[in-house]
Image 1 (cartoon, helix red, strand yellow):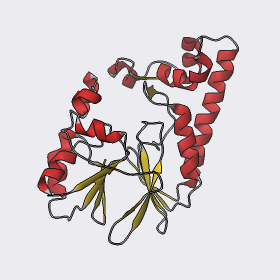
Image 2 (cartoon, rainbow, N blue to C red):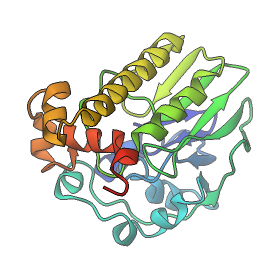
Image 3 (cartoon, rainbow, N blue to C red):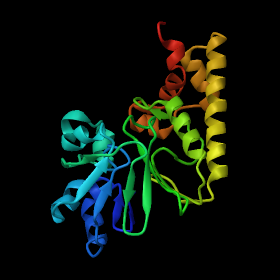
Image 4 (cartoon, helix red, strand yellow):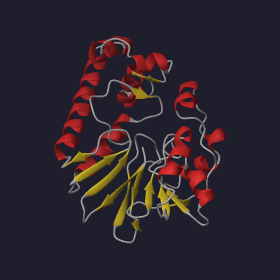
Length: 248
């Protein structure tokens, strides 16, 4: 998903849809791109937009910049990721700091570092409007799986951080736009914490990983079959248990 607001693009979707996005924005004055993180479905049209606009700045977390510059080497894609989103072309960017302000003609967005979904994840907050662009930090529903490199406890901490903000609209990268999202955010945090505490409780009682996974999340999902276990119930359980498993 991508957003255009007051000359600023927030993410650019995947490589498969880069041409379509360029057609949609061809008459819009794109003055900068901000990437919420470096995953391939968020930086896919960076290069094609950058090539069409001399001097266009792309802004992102400092850790995202090397990946954006050389995505094939630094972010190898599983088959399903190549199939769904494809390889992004290299693009050049500039770093943004936590709490840095990004100003457009009418608005001012504050950068908030929100790791968990990826180490280089950021959100953008327009305080006067109460708008928050959350990338993939907030995804609706009750999670039954996680990708191997995600950190569920950092996701929860980042959700708690943005839940403190005064919000009127939440613009996620992979879910529906939410008006007055406080209730949704609190429900998400509560669900993730409750499940996490239950995972730890069962593990400390002597349940093995497979038993905990079946008890709390049921049988295999089509997503984990398709991704060959890269995104799965087991990976979610392991992320909850990362501190318990250290040294074991």
